[in-house]
Image (tube, rainbow, N blue to C red; front, side):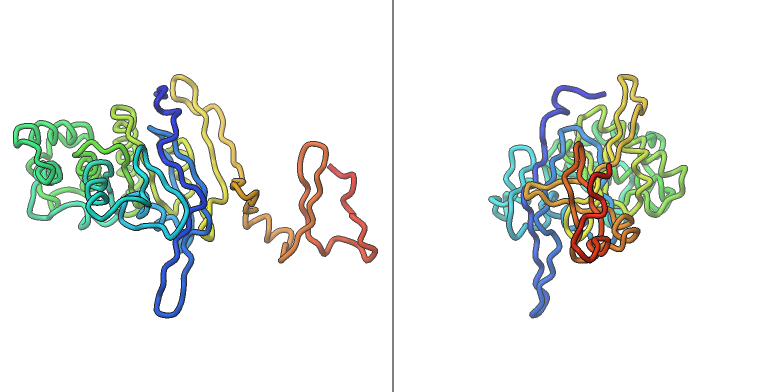
Length: 304
């Protein structure tokens, strides 16, 4: 359920830019991205390959450094951290769940041993490691699988163990990259239930990176990305019982006054290079330049 802390901004990206240099070429992965995420929010970043969502996830996880802009996660300014501070940040504040289970779990360790490993690296006592690992595995519904190695677990079970591993050091931010990309629909439901349970119990902020726009039914907010910037947002509002009461889709207006029209709108109206806009009584009209007549008159003047 929502708490007061969940209304506080936890992540803030301002005019975020990331440029990769490949030989003599420069690839712009993020182009002045603005984004705010509240503490305890469970949201999804959605977009096609090359949209910049994985780059953003790597920056928020301390795995990469932006070229320009500002990015804060909690009390951390990610642009000002040195390498040792980045390691400490990743170890204590961020949990990762990757699509490929080989990146999440060591095959020769049991489920419990996999969950205990990040705590061992943080110097937590063996007694506390064992107790916390069991608690986390029970929370994801795998209390009966403590002594099973990954090859004796289904794909969905492996991902739930991976979520427990990601939560082992009680991070404030959990990043999940396509966590349901390689499992069936039933396993996906169990994975999302585990994510919701952790969000509700520990108030962890969860960001899911995915290609699947249908994830909007499982999270509170979906932010769509295109060409290195946020483009659309789907916001679900729930009542006090947690039931969805409305779902609205928006285009996002950034600090520079730019917005990205949905690609379907651009294709439908054959918008190219320039478009006409008109401030009307309570909204803005947009239409192709080609629809102006030869005298330059506005064919949509006065239309609402």
